Amino acid sequence: MIRPKKDKRTKKAQREPFDIYFGKPRIEIFGGECIVDGLDSVIEYSCERIKVRLGTQVIAFYGSNLKINSFTREGAVVQGNIESMEFSS
Image 1 (cartoon, rainbow, N blue to C red):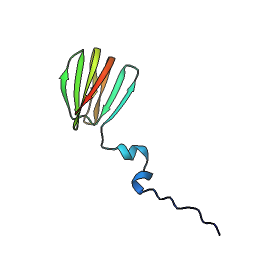
Image 2: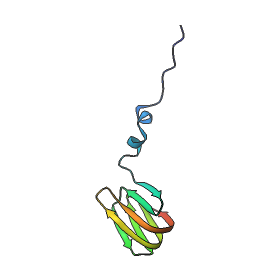
Image 3: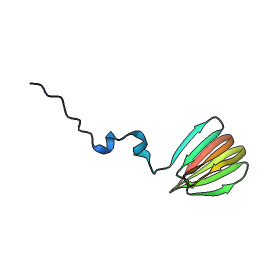
Image 4: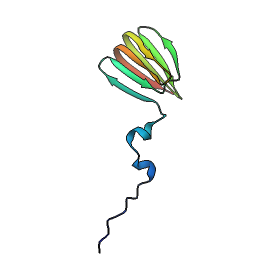
């Protein structure tokens, strides 16, 4: 009798993708918007540069007409003409 092989992956590896990243910073870019989840604080805010802290990471958005459209405990939405982003720790 041939038995099917057991899946040797750990429970952690079998979780849904959302579960793996839950509680960790996440960035989603589409069009002229960037959703930033896991935001700790806003470090700098102007129409040319927005700097935010996500845990140990700092993300700087560079462009024109930048603004934070929505700011909640979970994150923020950066809008405008995002030309570049810089990541640092």
